[in-house]
Amino acid sequence: MSIQPPLRHLLSLQDLPRPALETLLNDADRIASGPSRNSSLRERHVGRSVVNLFFEASTRTRSSFQIAAQRIGADVLNFDVAQSSARKGETLLDTFLNLQAMGCELFVVRVAEQDVLQTLADASRPGVGLVNAGDGRANHPTQGLLDMLTIRQHKGRDFSALRVLLVGDILHSRVARSDLHALRTLGTGEIRVCGPQALLPGDATLDGCHVFDRLDAAIEGVDVVMMLRLQRERMEEGLIGSLDDYHRDYGLGAARLRRASPEAIVTHPGPMNRGVEISDEVADGPQSVILQQVANGVAVRMAVLDHVLSVT
Ligand code: ASP
Image 1 (tube, rainbow, N blue to C red):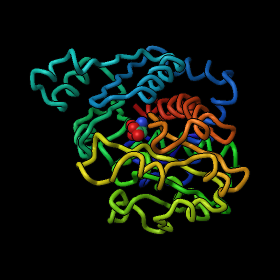
Image 2 (tube, rainbow, N blue to C red):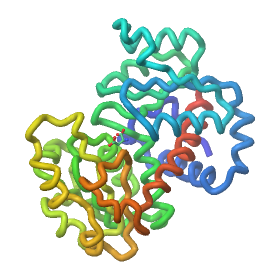
Image 3 (cartoon, rainbow, N blue to C red):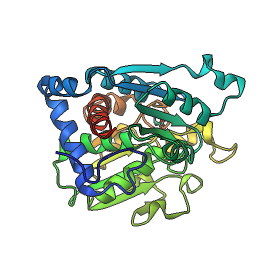
């Protein structure tokens, strides 16, 4: 099914209407459940050119965009920032304009600053699309989509009775922001958040959420526990105490998880700080769906690339 208006760029989940979000999830779910559909995707996109333009580190997102692009038959350029003229001071916009001039059609972009994606979108020619692969602490739309797909596969399409808890460093987390946009759009019954006061944003990010400072209370009876990485690279010194204190107060271990619904699932976007926000026992335990999230990442990115390339 096509999305209206067509998805020229995917920069954020904030303003993505529910039917568009659900179409992407339905498509990704079909892709995830069998490779049979991939041949028609390949027919449509073989030889199209996708660029991975990552100015921040990445393991999962970059490789899964690459795999997704290859599975739909596109040619992928993994732009190597460290070996590029970015090191000589060339701006990101100039880098983009040059690759666009070479005929690249879809740019998957990760940057530390949050307004850059819109600048590139404004500078994009007709026929060129952008997908945000993470912009600072603001958005990570494909992570939000893969998280929703994973929840849906376990809990069904109706989120209205679900209690979902996000735990940890929400202040610095683009994943949390994209998850919150999507959870609201999908009509989630109750959204809880829990973290140290210093890591909870004071703006509209948490509108409509139930905010807890004690994890033992927050986790009571929830259906989904979404753990977040402590983003020390974005953090000023002294925002939190020691890592041991953090683990004691906000870490998810097996005993704490028993307070959630017995069927609760546990997500984490990776990379995990094992022993800090999550114990090995939980990360590798039966309620963890962390590797399923990773697998869904490929399907979600195939669906997103399919839609954006169909416009460009
Ligand atoms: N990999 C995710 C991101 O790039 C989550 C994280 O790094 O904590 O935002």
